[in-house]
Amino acid sequence: MGINILLTADPQNSFEWMLFLTKKYYKMFLEGTWLTLYIAVLGTLLGFLLGYIIGIIQDIKTGQGDNPVRKFFVNLMKSVAGIYVEIFRDTPMIVQAMIIYYGIRQLGIDLQPVFAGILVTVLNTGAYMAETVRAGIGSIDIGQREGAWAMGMSPMKTMIYIVLPQAFKNIIPEMANTFLTNLKMTSVLNVIAVQELFMAAKTVGGNYYKYFESYLVIAVIYFALCFLFNKIFNLLEKKLKGKSDYALAVEYMDNQ
Amino acid sequence: MGEKIISIRGLGKSFGDHEVLRKIDMEVSAGEIICIVGSSGSGKSTFLRCINKLERQSTGKILYHGKEVRDVQRDVNEYRAKVGMVFQSFNLFNNMTVLQNCMVCTRKVLHLSKEEAFDRAITHLKEVGMAPYIHAKPAQLSGGQKQRVAIARSLCMNPEVLLFDEPTSALDPEMVGEVLNVMKELATTGLTMIIVTHEMAFARDVSTRTVFMDSGYVVEDAPPSELFTNPKNQRTREFLSRYLAG
Image 1: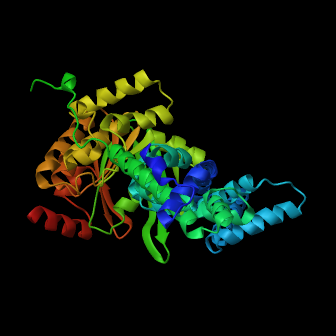
Image 2: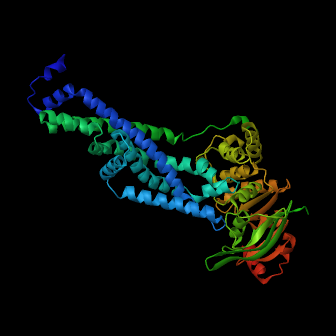
Image 3: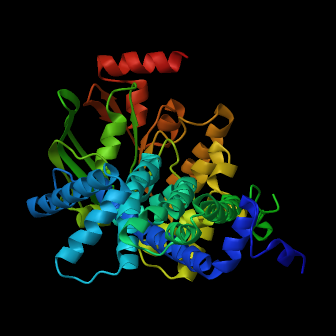
């Protein structure tokens, strides 16, 4: 096989070293890739969910006519949500990872690094997503809501059936962006010993003292993953745009 | 005249220090077609929005069949399901087709079955001549078509009263007619309507009562035959002379 000729046991240049390391440690790289994807996908999806909930909470409005208990409860939820968003947007993810991982372990709970990694990704994504959702909701004309309210639809149903579907469509590019960021940001989770791609490169590079080549390998992997997802998101966006024409329902045409 | 549906008692509305509505009293009975006219900024749109509770009144109250509509979300929702509204800017749901626009509220608010909701939607879309467009999205329709769909959408709720907030003001002149014709048709069905409009000829020909508003007051409230030919108030006369001269 042609490729095997290149894979000498005695690599001479950086390119050969990359191939050598890839072949020797392909299992480690694959596992790292898998874990990176796993954390990014799960963390992002749950983060989106959290972001939507927080974004909707921040959008709840209380009127003068509401009873004081409800008002107090809504304001409390809004404050908590606000503080959470502020804290996670204003600190680096790598620091959040350390604090959450070591903090929870100090409480005597045996926290797995992967679980902690997902938790950090979810909380981080949720905070950013909350702002995106809030902006997305804000971008929908108030008339859309008034149209629904004026026919007796409750504010919650209006949010679910009228506002969110439109806001969702508007923020798809931002959601895709967030996912790609997360895919790359999982690399900071190596500080809490998650065996993702960055950790794999660190380990592999250390074995032969070939850091440059080892990191080049994962750079290619990160690039390929992001490139692929980018293309998928673009397709998805196009598909969601829908048709620009429509068919007349001829069965309801009058013969005028 | 039919039984009283809506009674407005001492309705006032202020935005900060600015008093937009001042102690308005009005009774709306079944079958009435009330046109509210007046210059821009006279408070007529705010008044209509207060009737639908889209604006909360600062003072006074609204009675629906003799019972006060409290500012509790559930009461307001139930009341709005019976008192529909058609907007100047249509407010059709942009993410839905014409058919979905006409079905979502009957399905989610009135909990009709899919078949019932569909039948109602088609019936009312036929009334406004928009049934062939059920698969179109709002963005693909002209202004006049959008407003006709919006009217059909409101009719699907079987409202007792339908409010119109300057339904033709955002339309090109040649589309005003098609919407007014639909409204004239509706007027013959006995539906109670309250219409804020600048279309004086329409008010004169179709309404059973014309209300003239000026700086937050109801200045004159009379049958159109009186109000247009023999206005009692000086302000009404000035307003009408400017309109009818043009």
